[in-house]
View 1 (cartoon, rainbow, N blue to C red):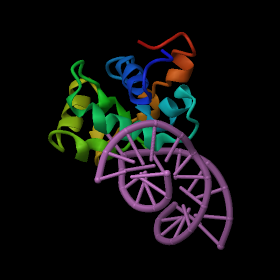
View 2: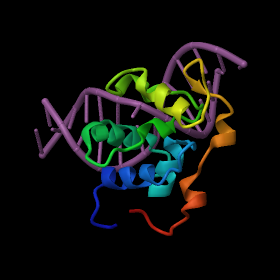
View 3: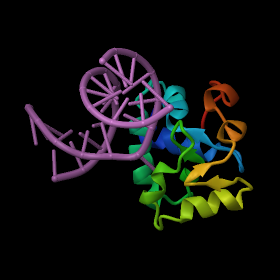
Length: 115
DNA sequence: AAGCTGACTATGG
DNA sequence: GCCATAGCCAGCT
């Protein structure tokens, strides 16, 4: 997907996240090759707010497993609601057993491909 | 065109 | 172990 813009690639990866799984901005950034520039991932997701194929941005949290992006959702509680609906447990705005449900694209997808 | 911004992360004190 | 600082890079004003 060399033609895809940076955020398009971010969307593609985020869509590959299995239900009930979560990942961090850094993991996605690393997979995209942008290193630790996780800000770009979050910024990209900010743009995904009205994308046609829904982008499960709620499955993307910071490295601490906290729902830092929830404030940017249509409703601040939507992210938590969605995660809970996926079988996860949200405690104090953070994912319980975050590492347990962690999904690393670089590890799972490796370089197979996205989208 | 130049500078600021940002849903982060790593490192140092 | 918590607070402060810096690096990150693509898009927007």
